[in-house]
Image 1 (cartoon, rainbow, N blue to C red):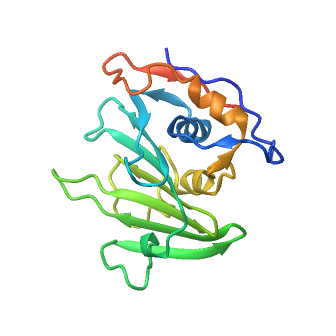
Image 2: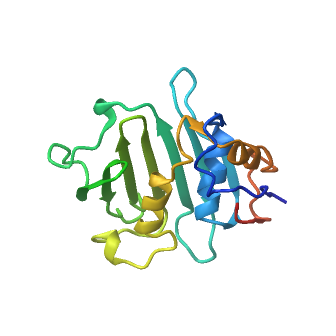
Length: 196
């Protein structure tokens, strides 16, 4: 049974804090998207700064598995999504938010090949955060569609203040408490309670 411990998400003043980890990144993601998951594992790249988490979900009758990836990098203009210059997405919109620039971009479904994906990026002065969701088909603007993980949820993940290189001790502890880390659970899915 995968579980995470309670996390005080309101504690913005834990400035001593602790260093962000892959597991802490997963705990924050699970706080926004609780429920049944088949796999939770780290997604950081050896030799590259940053942390990440990969959460995989399966729903009966769905053609593709659902995957939520959350990644945190150091601020890097070269990694930024530029809607004006990047023609690889079917749609792309940016807006200013208090933390920086928030971008929503998506690729549409290619039948029998690719389910498409929705990506939300926060470009802040101190970090670059991606929340990427694929699985349910993407046809048209996902902001106007009912989806298991909505665009507004992806935006909330990307903007979560705990996804910074210094985070709260509570969220690091919540990440350490995730059981069966990196172990695929299918077909026996597990319930992951909400953090905090």
